[in-house]
Amino acid sequence: MIEVKGLRKNFGELDILKGIDTTVEKGEKVVVIGPSGSGKSTFLRCLNRLEKPDAGSVIFDGTDLTRASEKQLNKVREKMGMVFQHFNLFPHLTIRGNLTVAPVKLRLMSREEADSRAMEMLKKVGLEQKADSYPNMLSGGQKQRIAIARALVMDPEVILFDEPTSALDPEMVGEVLSLMKQLAAEGMTMVVVTHEMGFAREVASRVMFMENGLIAEENEPDKFFGSPESPRLREFLSKVL
Amino acid sequence: MDAFLQKLYETFIVDDRWKYLTEGLKTTLVITFFAVLLGMVIGFLVAVIRSTHDMTGKMKVLNFISKIYLTVIRGTPVMVQLLIIYYVIFSSVRIDKTFVGILAFGINSGAYVAEIVRSGIMSIDRGQFEAGASLGMNYPKTMLWIIMPQAFKTVLPALANECIVLLKETSVAGYIALEDLTKGGDIIRSVTYEAFLPLIAVALIYLIMVVGLSTLVGKLERRLKRSDRG
Ligand SMILES: Nc1ncnc2c1ncn2[C@@H]1O[C@H](COP(=O)(O)OP(=O)(O)OP(=O)(O)O)[C@@H](O)[C@H]1O
Ligand SMILES: [Mg+2]
Image: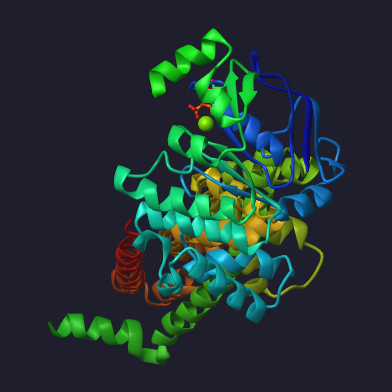
């Protein structure tokens, strides 16, 4: 579904991604871990081209995003949800507005369709009673669940998560992770950058260790955590586990 | 006391001289109102052009024109701009002076509005653009439905203050013989040879309007603060 070939990205002098090759298949749950600054977010943001790669290609359902027109790109993004560390909900809109603004303004749904789809997704994340609240009235965990619902309303083929629980108080991490587990169980294709090793073990179909702008090692979770090959990964795991 | 009342009578009552002030006030308000509207339209357009260019590198030509506009307008006195528009640009056409006033003050105000709105757009977290983009919304849609409503709310008090500034600045309209409030007072002075009363009256009217508007802006600010707690 997503094919990444020779992906490179630099910010000025800094080479952040130094040639990433990987493929995400439909239904896969790829968890990306690695030390801070290793390029995990940059990698994720290249997948939906929030960052423009300097070389290589990202091919989503046959469209090369590095060469796509603006129009094609936006079409692709409709099908590629993203959940941010800091939620990035729209503070001036109600929860319902947050969920419906894109499908309505993009003319993918009528207002009524969007409203009913939004309610459906709010039920799914267990927050239907918050439809008329504003984001600033919600807890962090609730905000992130709304952000996930906002992505879901678009009926995406894949959702990218960039440290979705890192900005949350510890007691709220669980509710977001369990929602993500539910999505995984329903077959959603997911690429998740996270420090939650328990989640990686339990949910991932493949865990990817990024270091210094490269994928240093990737494997299914049992082998990844059970018998890491590179000393670097072993060292990293010994620190975080 | 009698002498004072006598002066009041001569200044405002004789020949219905108070009408210079009420008519002048009307002109001042009309010019201010439409100049504010024009300034908002120009200002928002220029702000969007400038910030779009800053963020995406597009609209190079429009951005260049906008920058010249901002530099010229903010780098010259509004009175000179008024005189140039009236005596140079419209020198050979007969044209309604009120319209010229609206045009001059609107174009002038637009430059200040543009910078206010631009600062508002720039104050919005990048994450908002990214959230819009990640949902497939293109730049103009994100701008219109996500960024602008937030930016507008942020800069509303500053915009309201700009209106107050504009109200006062229109007092130079008399230089193209527009009979605004200031000019009205000045006409009375020139017929009664008495400067104190008409000019103080003019000052008081401005002061009351400005203080009134400022109070409203203050209220607005407090309400906006309350509504975006958290
Ligand atoms: N827009 C940018 N301009 C310049 N440098 C950037 C930019 N974005 C990221 N970087 C730098 O690129 C490097 C990799 O950043 P990235 O956010 O991808 O790391 P990360 O693996 O997600 O780290 P973290 O775990 O801290 O989120 C960092 O050193 C960061 O400072
Ligand atoms: Mg990161």
